[in-house]
Amino acid sequence: DIQMTQSPSTLSASVGDRVTITCRASQSINSWLAWYQQKPGKAPKLLIYGASNLQTGAPSRFSGRGSGTEFTLTISSLQPDDFAIYYCQHYESYPVTFGPGTKVDIK
Amino acid sequence: QVQVVESGGDVVQLGRSLRLSCAASGLTLNSFHVHWVRQPPAKGLEWVALISTDGTNKVYTESVKGRFTISRDNSENTVFLQMDYLGIEDTAHYYCALEVRSSGRAGCFGTWGRGTLVTVSS
Image 1 (cartoon, helix red, strand yellow):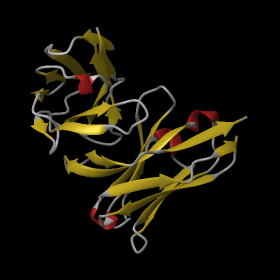
Image 2 (spheres, rainbow over the protein chains, first blue to last red; image 1 turned 180 degrees about the vertical axis):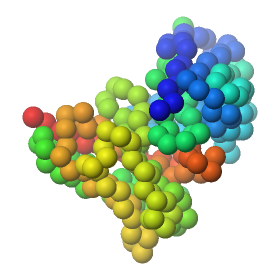
Image 3 (cartoon, one colour; image 1 turned 90 degrees about the vertical axis):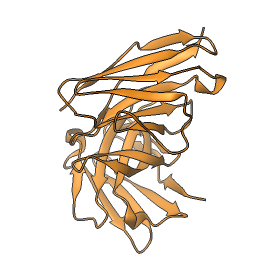
Image 4 (cartoon, rainbow over the protein chains, first blue to last red; image 1 turned 180 degrees about the horizontal axis):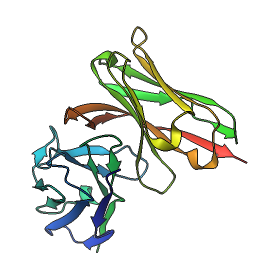
């Protein structure tokens, strides 16, 4: 199985900050990488697919980059609504697996 | 309004069975590959199972093979997850998720239900 890791596990930031989360795969997944946002008590919400494509309805302050084994999710200017947990997920093959999550909280 | 709604979650004893349902409204479920993803309380996400649009292709994560069965009834716009021989480790929120982006070999999930909680007690 392909293992996904994320760093940092927790990130403390302020409104307006530029924030970057890193996701790494244990082997190449090309660009088959998605990012999700999850708030307490809610289902995850797809933000980015194909490593860099913004899902319809996701705010443009979210962007993704990378290919192969290393990927990043960047929030250009953190908003109050962005404090949440972010997960990456590969979909190169089954089983798809998720990273352990990065919690973005208020500094 | 486009949505999927899970039901069937409950408190169940170790070793017993439970069937979850995923019903759709505002969309035709048979247009989508449908997945179950679970999340133990306060933990991360784990993909569980997939069923293809026509029900002919089913894939499971290793830990549930032989215990869980995914099925669908397209006439009822519903997908099911039959869970047998439940263990403590199966305690989780179970989400129904629709595949919307595919690599051709697997996919990611653009529509999720709110989840249903399965608690396995000893």
